[in-house]
Image (cartoon, rainbow, N blue to C red; front, side, top):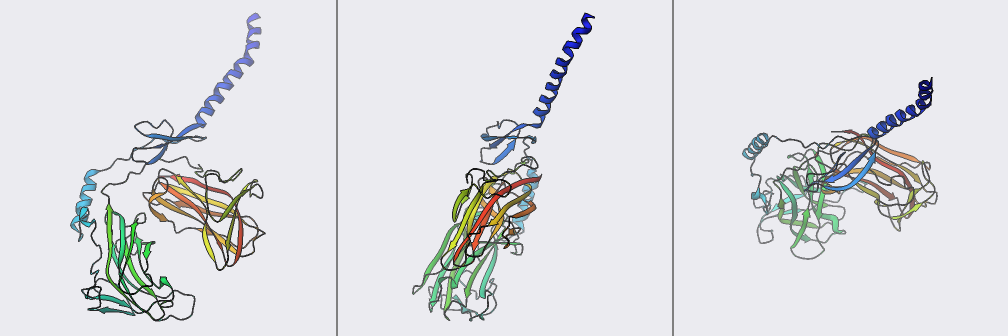
Length: 434
């Protein structure tokens, strides 16, 4: 009887102990410290154990889902070597130091007529009219009709960029009649993901002449190719609407690699858990911390979409329509995958002019949104509703080779006045990892 009484007394205590042990084990398996690390090359990755192996710990995140341990992809060196040999043997210029500080363009001085250049109307070859008495390209664009379309006369050439990572663009230019606007004449470069300039197409940089007499040198340096770019299209253009019937002469055009790389970038084989939100302070509960702001920005406690707290952005103009970055944040996601991105927008009642906004994502090859970049062709715009609008881009796949992304909001005002907007609940979440 005594033993039975003792069992009755300690049984509730034993149940509580077992319950505590079970719950503690469940919590331990559900919660994990996620370590944000950087390897010796600055590549960012995440794992559920201390960084180690010479890596630097950048921070620690508490999450309710576990992440896989770091996995370093293996490479088949024999495959890489055979691929390089095949590429070198089937192309005109070998990959390597031979392209450094050399003009990638063919017939850049137009000595061989307009060979290798693509063009249509309003373009002529001018022997003896070049900078030093050689040949030149002449563009005399006709005035286009008075419509809203852009009419440009363009002479272009597509070239592979090989292993170049920095470039300079330029050429010699001569006016014959000054234009109404300086951007009537330009030289520019556009990056493409295919060597024939048919896939992709992301603007790179440009140079335009000053209104001075005589030959002048145009140059733009430290140009970084877009992410995944394999070729560049150099375009020489004239817009007949703003030339004042003037003519333009071009000579000694160049696109040169000023920096090359023979290294193959590493891509970590892991990322944070599915459903993890990379955005910091996306709900604006207390301030605008973690965000780079533009226009006139401030934090307001009301209104918010789901909860109180929002970012107030005022886009203003004295003359015409303008657009600029309103909010942006860079996230290091560590590895490729598929993501959902979104934001809540509300037009302010104090707005005196119509306006709009766009949510977009740009991928970068290096941590901290540095290096080559590629802006996704998927975006979402606001409408004229006065209610809260939830902008969403679902299942957006990161560009191959990218490890960071800039989430950016562009806000516009469509004429004189101001367009006030409130922003809230911005996120960038993992849907699936590679």
